Length: 239
Ligand code: TMP
Ligand code: ASP
Image 1 (cartoon, rainbow, N blue to C red):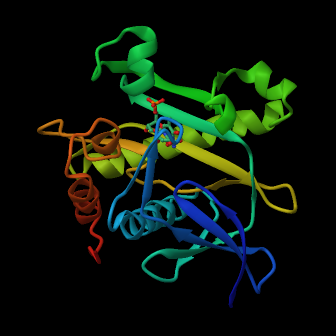
Image 2 (cartoon, protein in one colour; image 1 turned 120 degrees about the vertical axis):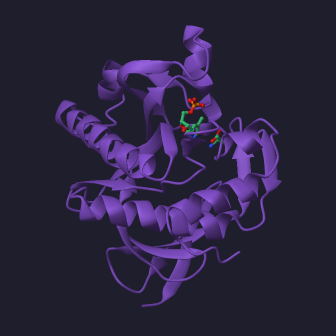
């Protein structure tokens, strides 16, 4: 299979066509952005680490019955995935109040939620990814009621699987963001990446932040934190 023309360049990845219909080629970049692109930097090795970490999570989910776009990791920075059209929805699932939820409800960061909370954000850079509700999603025709129910059910299952897997590695899954897409046949599929860019991971003993909050909040040692996540997942650090 060959890499063909670039279809899209996002903030953290590039998407290419391949010589095989139905398959895309992803390239993970070292670029880091926060606050809707207002803060930018290069984090050496981030693309390599996120490619490997995301491959581990997506393979695990596949093994546990959560079908997703991942096919295989083909190099340090590259992955082959199934072709989907991404639904412009960021699906955030939370176990512990942090970030925008802590701010919105005035809760102290670290407050455990009595049950997981799923939130929808409209993926639109110009609007700054506003939070929306089920009715907005229906009115915008982003997903049907049935698809949305399926997305929520899958997100909660992913939460259960990852929470348990990470707890065994002394990590707390505070919250995470998923994206879903549709295949040419209209089949809904979990897509995008699952990495320290898109999740909050805290060390269960020290509560140290081991994710992109180190970049967002200028805490330093960003790459070390991503390396530590990969180490606990049993991956090899190639960087
Ligand atoms: P938030 O607390 O800033 O709303 O973030 C919730 C989760 O979503 C957190 O794990 C980080 C992730 N996230 C993204 O993956 N992309 C984004 O653009 C934002 C704002 C958050
Ligand atoms: N993806 C966000 C951005 O647009 C950053 C974040 O994860 O907070 O820059």
